[in-house]
Image (cartoon, rainbow, N blue to C red; front, side, top):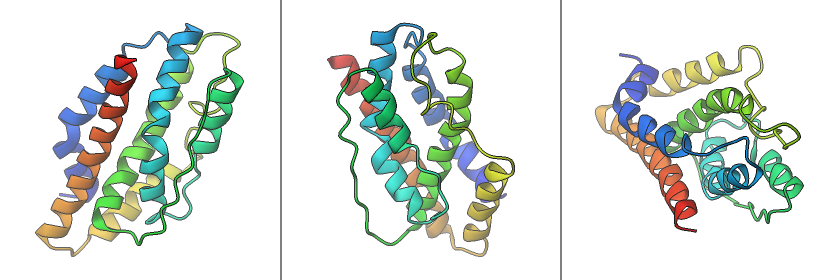
Length: 172
């Protein structure tokens, strides 16, 4: 089984749970959309910082998220400096971060007219998703069971980070 297939299989329930939580937002409503973006702002910078440690070519979306929040007049303190070396868990984070880019492209179509969509519209460039998946598979190739488990745990932790960010938003 490829690393991507393993990640998809092992994180399917977590992925579905996060999609379900974020799917409750009415992206056509400016206030609800702002809360959606604020929840993402509590997760994306950290997740992206982990992902970039193993995939330096990552096109960061944190600045786009900050711009969209700013356009809505909402605070955007998104600076995270992760100077650590990449680990198997960070490959899992990359899988989640770049998978969310796919979903963002679909969600951008639901955003209300006149609302900023730079963050959600930052879809993959041609071949980018495939190259990232191949990189994950190559990184995992020949690794032991512990390495693979850590990679999956990293993906699970990243989904949990997004879920926690959404729950914090719902409490507000």
